[in-house]
Image 1 (cartoon, helix red, strand yellow):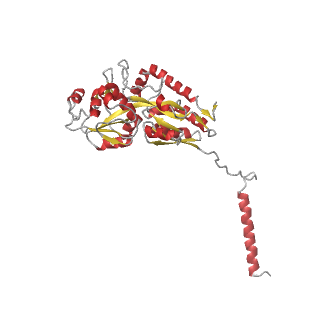
Image 2: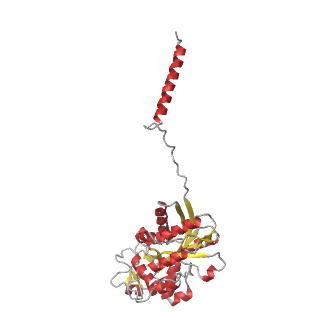
Length: 367
C-alpha cells in the first residue's frame, strides 16, 4: 500500500507529463509539422540628415512620409532657414541642404563640388492683420517697397487708398515684420523689391538677409506668422503653405501687366513659364517680376533647390538619396500641388534629372 506522500508524488509527475504532452501538441500544426520560427524585420531604415529652407519644410516632410512607405529611406529635416542650412552643409553636417537662394559661382569657389537641383517652386505671400477688412488687400510693387522702406507708415496713406478704392482702410500705423535669420524666402522677397524699386535696390539690397530700415525681425516663417496673427496693423511675408495653414489673409500683388494677382500654385507656375528661356541657360535665374506679357503671373515667386555634395563615400547612400530626389521630380510633384506649391515645368524637371546624373559614389558614376 502506497503512502500518502508517494501517491502525491505520482500525481504530480502524471500532471506534469500531461501538461508537457499538451504543450507539445499545441506547438504543432494540424499536419504534425512544427511551426515556422517567427520572422523579424532585419532591414534598417536609411536616414538622411538635412536642413535649411522653411519654404520647403512641409513638402519635404510629406515626401519623406510617402516615400518611406515603399522604401527604407527617411529624411530628418530641420527647418532652420536657408542660410543656416547652407552653413551646416559647408561644415559637412548634412546629407543635403535646401535653399530658396542657390549659390552663385563666386560662392561655390573653395567648396567641395556641389550639385544644385530645383525640386519645387511657389509664391511668397504678403500677409497682414487688418480687422474689419473683408476683401483682399491690393498692393503694387512700388507701394510694398515703400512700406518696407519705411516711407509709407500708415494704412490710410494715399498710395494704399488708391490701390484699394471703395475699401475703408483703418486709421493705424503699419507695423512691418520681416525675417531676422538668413532666409531664402527673404532672398526672393528682396529680389522682388529690388526689381520694382531703384531706391530699395540701391539702399537696402537683396539676399538671404537685408539691411532692413524698419520693422520687427522674427526668426523663421512660423514666428512671422505668429506675430502677424496676434498683432493688428502688421504686414509680413511668408510662404503660401504657412499662410494657408495659419488661416491668415494674403494680399493680391500687381504684376507688370497691371493685374492684381492672388498668390497660388497656378499663378506661380505662370511666372516660371515666363522665364523658361532664362532658366534654360541657368536654373539659378530669378523668376520675380515677369514681363507684362505674362498674364496672370504672380510676381513674387521662386524656385527651391536641394544642394548635394557631388560625391559620397558611404556605401549605397548616394544612390539611395539620388532615388529619393528623383521621386521628388516625378510622383512627388503631385503632392507638391496638394500642398500649394507649384508643379515644375517639364523642361525644368528634365534639367533637374540631368543634374542628378552628375552625382557619383566613391568617385564612380551610378547606374
